[in-house]
Amino acid sequence: MRITNWLPESVTRSTKGILSIAFVFYFTTLFAQNLEGTTYYSADGKKFEFVNGSEFNNTDTSLFLGHVGSWEVGNGKLILFTAVDDSTEIRDTLDITYQSKDRISVYNGARYFTLQKKNASRSENYFTSIIRAILGMSALLLLGFLFSADRKHINWSLVIKGILLQVVLALLILKAPYVEGFFEFLSRAFVKVVDMAHEGATFVFGSFIDGTVNPYVKNFATWILPSVIFFSALTSLMYYWGILQRVVMGMAWLMKRVMGLSGAESVSAAGNIFLGQTEAPLLVKPYLGRMTKSEILCLMAGGMATIAGGVLASYIGFLGGEDPQQKVYFAKHLLTASLMSAPAAIVFAKMLFPEREEINPDLSVEKEKLGANALEAITNGTTDGLKLAVNVGAMLIVFISLVALANWLLGKFGYYTGLNDIIASFGHYSSLSFEAVLGYTLSPFAWIMGVPWEDSLIVGQLLGEKTILNEFVAYGNLATLKFYMSDKAVLMTTYVLCGFANFASIGIQVGGIGALAPERKSTLAKFGMKALIAGTLACMSTAVIAGMLY
Image (cartoon, rainbow, N blue to C red; front, side, top):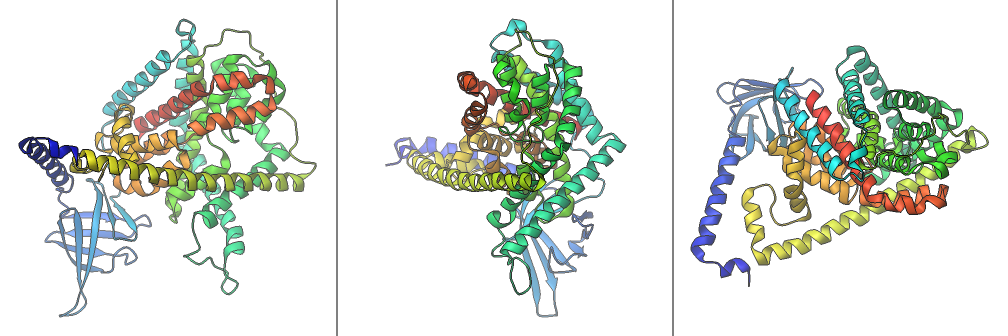
C-alpha cells in the first residue's frame, strides 16, 4: 500500500492541486513569449522568420521541411504547416525545449535544433553579473575557510593574487581582441587536429566500398574514443620533443612570480593544464619525496581541477557535435577553463592546508624522455591512450548501468511513498531518481555560483554527476540538456565540469602518484578528500568568473 493512501484525501488533493497550479503557471509563463515578428538564425546563418499573422519563412530545409507556411504554438509545442498543393499539407510538430527573447530550441523526435537572434542581448546587465559573481566567489572562499586545517595561517595575499590571475586570464582570453583572436585560432587548430583523429577512425571502421563510416556504426566507441588515443600519442610526441616542457615552464614561471610558489608546485600546476593527473607528477618526480604536505595537496588539487588534452578532445566532440562553429566555441572555453583552473586549484589548496614549512624555490622540469626516439614516443603514447580509452569506455558502461539501477530502486521507493507524484508535479523530473536527488540537493550551490534560478536544477544535477560519477557522464548528459538551458547556464556548466574532481580520482591519484613516491602514499591517502574539495571549489570558481563575463 502506498503511504499517500494513509493521508486524508483532502490533504492529498489540496497538495496536488497547489503543485499542479504552480506547474501550469510556470509552464505557461515559459512559453508565453510572442514569436510574431521575430527572426532567428541557425548556426550556419540560415534564416527562419516568424512573420506577423502566424506565417513563417524558412531558408534551411535541413531544419524544417517547408520554406513558407503557417505556424502555431500550444502546450509547449511549435507546429509548422506547409501546403504542398490544394489538398496536401506537410505538418512539423516540434517540442519547444527552451525559449527566450533571443533563442529558441526545439526537438523533432530525432534531432535538436537551436535558432538564435543575431547580436543577442545579455540576459542580465554587467552590474548584476558582477554582484552575483562577488556573492558566488565569497561563498566559495567561505567554504574554503571552513574546510581549512589551519585558518590562522591562510596566506590571503596568495588567495587574492590567485583570484586576480584567474580574472586577468579570463579577461584577456574572452574580452581582449588580439588575445581572443589568438585563442580562436588555437581553438580552430585544436578542432582540426580532432578531425584528424576521425581520419584514422574512418579507415578502421569505414566501409571498403565508399570509405565512409556508416551512421549506424558511428558512435561513442568508434568516433569519440579514437580521439583519446590520437591525442595521447600526440602529447607523448610533443613531450619527447620538449615542446610541452617549454610551455609548462612558461606558465610555471608566471605563477611562481605572481603567487610566490615553490618551483615544484608551480611546475606541477602548470603541467596539469596539459597532462593527466598521474602524468603531470612525472615533471616533478625528483622532488616528490621532499615536497611539503602543502605542496603535495597542491599537486593533487591541480590534478582534480584540470583535465588532460586527450579527454579534452572528447568533450569537444560531445558538446560541439557535427557543428564546426560549436566545436570551436566549446574548444575555446574548455581551453580557457583549463588555464584558469591552475591558479584556482592553488588558491583553494593553500586555503585548505596553508604552507608552514620551508619551500624549495628551484624551478626545473624533469628531463626524462618517454622513448628512445620519436617513433617509440608515439608508440608508447598510443598504448597509453588505448588503455585510457578502454578504461573510459568501461567506466561509462559501469557507471551508467549503476545509475539505471539506482533510478529503478528510487523509482520503486518513490511509487510506494508517493514521492513520484509530488516530484512529477513540479515538472522538472517525472519521478524520484538519482538525477532528481542531485538536482534538488545541489541547485542552491548552482544558484550561488550565478546560474539563473530556472537552470539551477539541471546544473546541480550535472555537478553532482561529475563529482559522484565522473565528468564524462556529466558532459555526455550536457550534450542533450544544453537544449533545455540558457546560454549562460551552458557556458558556466562547461567550466564547472572541466576537471577530474570525482571520488574515483582519489584512488587514481593515490595509486598513480604513490607509485612514483611510495613513501608519500599515506600523505596522499590522507589528503584525498581535501584534494577533491579543493578541485571542486576551483572548478566552481572558474564558472563564477566565466558567468560574470558572459
